[in-house]
Image 1 (cartoon, rainbow, N blue to C red):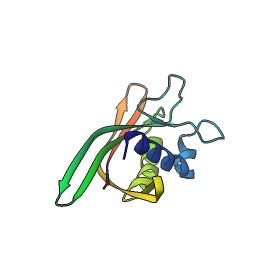
Image 2: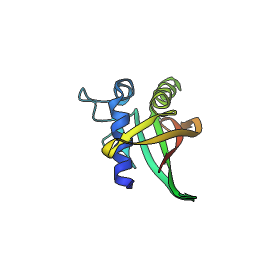
Image 3: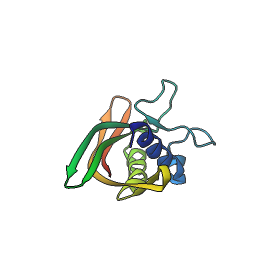
Image 4: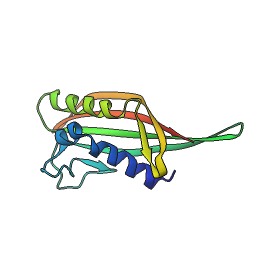
Amino acid sequence: MSNAALIQTVWSTAQSDASLSAAVSQTSDLTSGIYYNEAPETARMPYVVFHIIANETDHTFCYDFESTSVQFDVFSKKSSISEVSQISDKLMNVFDRAVLVYDNNDQIGCLRSSTMGPEKLKDGWRTIVGYEIQYS
């Protein structure tokens, strides 16, 4: 699976969950609030940014497996941790042990690998949620 296909699959999965999209959306069309790699300068909190951290290939007998580490950073400008925590919970509801479908109905599995935060920032809060996305 190419990184471009993985990015599109992760982004569309996040966007398709109405609860998560509504929590981070700044507009009624639900297209803002979830970004790959970095949020635009015009983005207003809350929002989610996800990154591909690493790709790893494993060859076991006659099977090839790939695993990709994906990190989600959740940002909120609220003075308390409630908003960033609620959005992180919604994100985990979408991706924990999820099976994502991409090209030609192929499937990939998600397994949460880490959670950090909430961490106090100068102008808000951040949590980090990491996943291993595995496919063959």
